[in-house]
Image 1 (cartoon, rainbow, N blue to C red):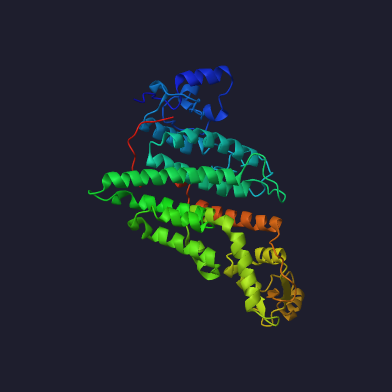
Image 2: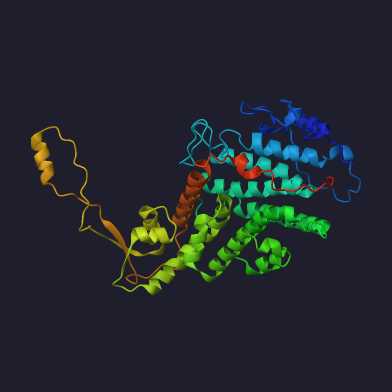
Length: 426
């Protein structure tokens, strides 16, 4: 029977204190309001580290194992007090927390090094949680954390040269941890469905299950075989939910290179869904440009602003970046029908008369011409990274910050999940 009543067994705290392995995220910080266990010393803030099981180990000391209640309290601490640690990229509502330059380091702003330090700390502390396999609610929060971390990494970490990975960050490893948590979560959902068969059919968890099946589909949207195998194990009521149907339509649109359907559904996806779709955008941009090049002739001129709308880009500057990345010919034309501007305030009547005689000047209109130059076989990686950073910042600004959602709100979202009442097994 699990009997450890704290986030970290006392013996481990003493041992790590002796070897100077207590993280700064396990010490009191000014922003902490009310840690789950009430204590502001290291015994109340330390969180059990992940350790691989020893080979051949059979007996497990129950005093080192935390029951489900303590595990969920630990996650609540990690995803509230620790996740919102100042300057680490997840406390965007804090003063001076906005970051436009990943290399800037003013006090209070998020930096790449601080983001990575916090990410690796939380990722380590939740790994045992995944191994524990004790709670649907725990795994749901872990999944959302990995998705949100991917979005923030896109914004905070400086782009790397082609063929190089960031020394302390791996998108592939983050996706592997995410896929592992999703896989364990689906096992627990099926177990709950089997237990509930003949009673309520597991309907209470359908909404929650639909959310995470959606994430699973979007994560593997470039792997039809993985999607097919997953859907065979998903209950029909979940497959028919609006979120899952939308995710499957996005998957089909990606496979068929359906520009209109993909970007229409992308525009109404949730912030975390969009985070998972970011890695698929370059392929859609490339195929969209190639299809447009086939559809339009040399004499056709396609408005640059309309091009930006079609491909869900911020504006004409980002559209120009994509055109440069694909080697599309661009040109500008002066507008013939200028819209009169508001007269400027002048210092004298002579200046006013002279200004009145000046015709209004309209900004030039950008156009794209197809088939004038060969398209690039691949999108320039550096420009692609800049476009993805811009997209990630738009998601952050327009769909998270302006809606007053905190990182803790996005990760925890309590009230939709059921807890699996099992004991910890590490």
